[in-house]
Amino acid sequence: MYSSVVERCPDKTEVLGPIPSTRTMTLSVVATPIGNLKDISLRAKEVLTDATLIVAEDTRTTGQLLKLLGIEGKKEFFSSHAQSTESSLQRVLARCVEHEHIALVTDAGTPAISDPGSHFVAAFREYYPEAIIVAIPGPSAVIAALSVSGFPSSHFEFLGFIPHKKGRQTLFQSIADTEHTVVCYESPHRIVKTLESLAEVLGSRCMMVGREMTKQFEEYLSGNAAELLQHFIETPETVRGEFVIVISPKDSRDIL
Image 1: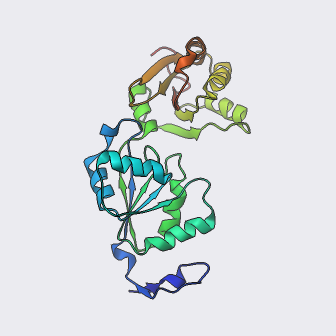
Image 2 (image 1 turned 90 degrees about the vertical axis):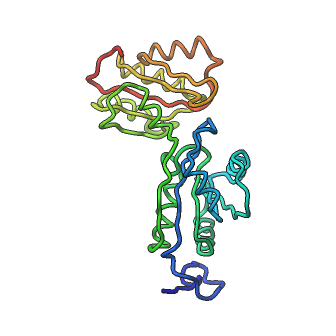
């Protein structure tokens, strides 16, 4: 089965002639380390070595990762991130047809998890319905933090990054009423303010905050929101890097 590029390019400005069926095209969604290079899997390294086209959140960051992993060979790079325009996305998708092995990576962790990679995967599936899409699992900050929290994980809710302004208070109240474990991300610029808000609605409910995960100064702190807030106020030098917050279910014990 054959199709032509002009059938897939919205502007229809160039016809490159017949192209092979996309039955042999594979998009691998590759998880990469969130801080410790040794967390790269053998399979991920193999896939990144074989891929001839890599779609990355930041091509410079991914290029440096490949260099550190010792991965060489001619590869084509395209960026796809939260600020990418629809026309940019369409150009990347059209380019994919010239490659059998395509890899999608984010700056750190698993693509499409609180990450714009989900938009690319959805667009790729629609653009190339016969292509194969596979997951190359690996590091994920949300799963790693949940695994060491000690909180129930058979049912949990992941919120991604907490909104900057609109809807923050409504969200915090919703968390207070939630009867299952909740996980979210926060930046160093807002972690203190977020803990202040959580202390107001959660009371003595237990939480865990992870920071610098898998890195040299990795740390996991447990307690209620007020206790964790006090810790970061007293040790401002530790307010750096991205934070993962894990909140215990509403009816759980107050003490781990």
